[in-house]
Amino acid sequence: MFEILKNKLKKAIKSISEKIEKKEEEKPKKTFEGIKEKIVKVITEKQLSEEDIEPILNDFEKDLIEADVAYEVAEKIKEDLKKNLVGKAIKRGKEKEVVFEALKQSLLEILTVPEVDLIKLAENKKPFVILFLGFNGSGKTTTLAKIGKWLVDSGYSCVFAAADTFRAASIEQLEEHGKKLGIRVIKQKYGADPAAVVYDAIEYAKANGIDFVLADTAGRAHTNKNLLDQMKKIIRVNKPGMKILVLDSLTGNDILYQCKFFDEALNVDALIFTKVDVNEKGGNIISSSYILKKPILFLCTGQNYENLEKYDPNKVLNAILS
Picture 1: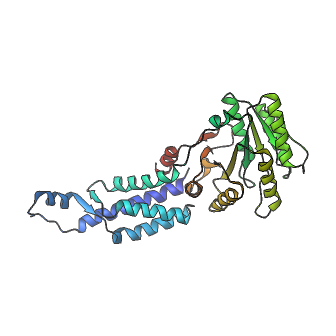
Picture 2: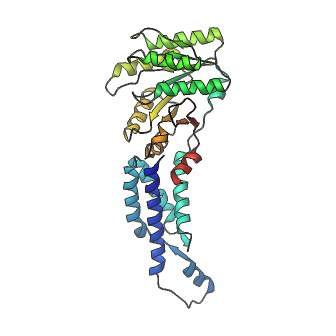
Picture 3: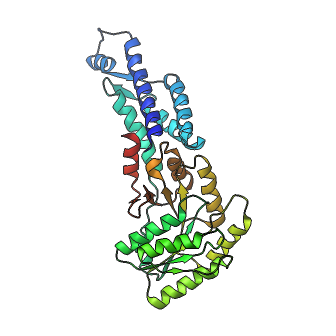
């Protein structure tokens, strides 16, 4: 996981550390100084100038972009490193440690997003309606089923709303998940109004004391404005408590377009990333965190219902820097 990004970061740490060590070797040794403290400082500490580090950071920025980190995010990381390293006295033997900590601090700031607790949100609103959004192929329907399993395992009841009445076999796919999990699926025919399907699911949940309604939606294509209008109507009519954008972490830099598009059109509340276990680059998770600054609820790490991990910025950071 994140192997490409991990290797790019290792390369940067090594390059900057070697530059600091080389600078010390090139410095003329001063064995006679009038003040003892000055001698100690010269021998044990060295400083980097902006000229020393700029070429290395420029290469590092290119490496980050190659690992699917957006340009503006790579620029931020570069500037963070420059701010934390230029002019700083670094003790001999501590070069890698100092560079590593500077990089860790920058990444953790980006990965730390607002937290949200689905269970607490739902305490004062029953049923609590969650709308799942995302482009075709993002793993939206399977992710919805995983959340359903997680809720049931946590002691809550839920119902699925098959509001993707556009894509062929979408209703059958959700029904198959419902059958495996023992969760009721509310549906209508293909071509039906998806807002009406969600409304029916909410009414069913109210009548049966069900805690959560999880609503699937059509995976909008770039050119299909009608599907976007349908989602706006679902929101207007049913007023979901949370709108979750499901993102395929393998998408590349197009993931930023998806983030901005859905957030500007529908005001996304939170994110879930899929296929994280096979993501070698990892940069788009960093980029999405920085661009949207929205809560990240879960990371999907496989096809099984249990392959759902609560998002932890420190855990992601450790995976990147390990």
